Length: 422
Image 1 (cartoon, rainbow, N blue to C red):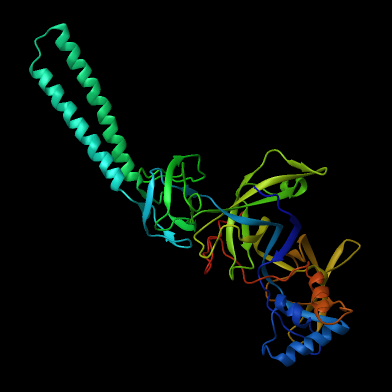
Image 2 (spheres, one colour):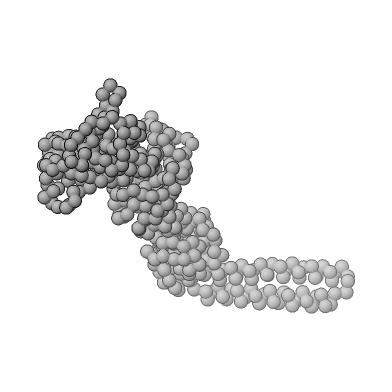
């Protein structure tokens, strides 16, 4: 498994709180991805908010229930759990090819066939030899007189029949081997055979995980052709991603932890779990890393062997938490307060009891109710263009949330299924 680089913990708030904008102030276009646009969603409103963020100001936000998440990021590549290398065991010329590279096959599909003329002749010859030996044995048994000589002749004939029966069995197996049959279902990633190629049967160790089909090779066969060596099938039902994490990061995760995957090659997120954590580290240049295997859950379309993915391993996830942006809270001499905005626009300082801070949010255990509005200060960005968005992202824990709350067990369009919550 490759050693993969990693990124430190990422903190996200999946829920998107509602917003009430104060006239003449706002977070700007970048921050609105987090807090949501104003009621009109107009370009003018977005531009006005961007100007407010440039000069700094106050933003009014609505207190709501959030889903808070803490995670560790890593990069890796998709690998199929099952794959198989198939080659002809028998020798002959390829007479038929049913499958090309890029096709999908089901277990039992015939991929290619070689000429059976010589194989058929060998089988008929073996059958004829067996029939003659069985007839000779029958005659000896009919003429048996109980003498030692007679008994010895019968015993020798029985041995010959047994040997010739094995020859017939081998010839029948060779006929079966004239067909190269898929031993697993999946995507054909390599198919070297063409009609007219001459193959020479042989055997070697393969990499497949499927069962031997008994007809034309299997995951433990190989052959020599005029072109290449074998047909490769990659299963499409089960996938893993191998990553490497530092000792500190490994201490934060456990088998069964939920994982969110993204890829530049895919439009949708998909999900998985931590399935294995190495007990011993790999040390390179004095740094110890641990191999961690992540397993994709659910059925996900469009996954391919070797696809690069980003994995976010969830180490902490709490749902329906009453929480507010941490920079909306002022703490002096151990007393925490927020500025509450009334419906008529007037404000009051109110003491609140806080819990832990996860990312850019702090839990509120007393002093506020869902639906109330509070005021928070937007720091001056001190830049323009994309720098504004980056500066504002820093105020909210370094990352914009990517969408609404993800209920446990929900199946997402085009993606796998998120396992149950922690």
